[in-house]
Image (cartoon, rainbow, N blue to C red; front, top):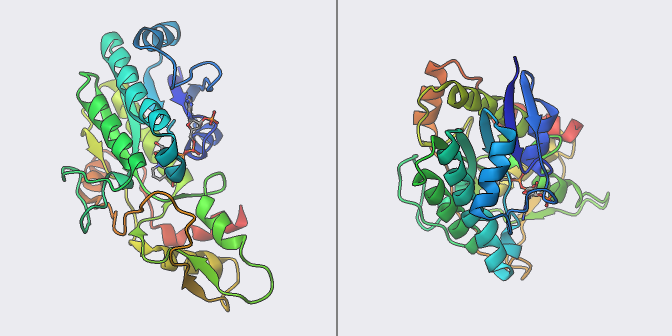
Length: 289
Ligand SMILES: NC(=O)c1ccc[n+]([C@@H]2O[C@H](COP(=O)([O-])OP(=O)(O)OC[C@H]3O[C@@H](n4cnc5c(N)ncnc54)[C@H](OP(=O)(O)O)[C@@H]3O)[C@@H](O)[C@H]2O)c1
């Protein structure tokens, strides 16, 4: 019988990738109208889980608009920190395992790369609230793991590829990006296969590390990632330049939020989970998609 996954955030970039490829799972994905992270109480989350009795909860919901989190600070706190804590408490009460998604923006205040156990150090309110969410989940008593992910791309998932390709207007003008940020792009469909593998282990009671860094392939600066996107799209002649401080970004971005995933990937390999491949080999799929 298919296992039952309660997916939160199914309308988002990552959530849509989960919904488009979850073979072997029966997925229920209530949206914001049914379960609003900003308003559902602790008892409300418990009732929601009692009514559904999933084998595992995958929380992909977040207030993930990094600049908007600076102005909607209370909203970011509610969605990224308070709600995950309440969901985790409900999971603990009903013995339902939880896989919670977090971010490389948990880091950034000092140079990386960062291993799973490193002290966090976010540099903007989004990261502060995501770290608070991680802590609430991990201290809840639930059988829960936090997967920190970075720079998603894929057919349903790439804000950055759109940002780059939207600038290609036929004039030959260089593409402008915040070139100095460094992290690791991650191909959403293969990440989803990996996350569902972890969810399966949680559902059957296998011990999973509390913090996971699913990371495959080399790190890249935004400039290198933009270069790879442009090359894959056939725009090898276009230059990539730094856009500097254009006054658009409200929130600070980490210059270095590189996740070191060696421990997670070693654990993952030993348990036969799907690989998290080198993103460079997959960047063309976003362009094609
Ligand atoms: N995208 C990336 O590159 C990236 C990088 C690192 C980490 N992450 C993390 O990955 C996870 C998924 O991110 P994403 O890119 O998929 O985000 P996204 O595209 O912005 O989607 C956010 C999801 O959260 C839901 N949500 C927001 N506020 C809600 C509320 N009050 N009540 C219920 N649902 C609410 C949204 O629902 P609506 O459709 O109703 O708004 C949507 O389904 C997040 O934890 C994020 O921090 C993402």
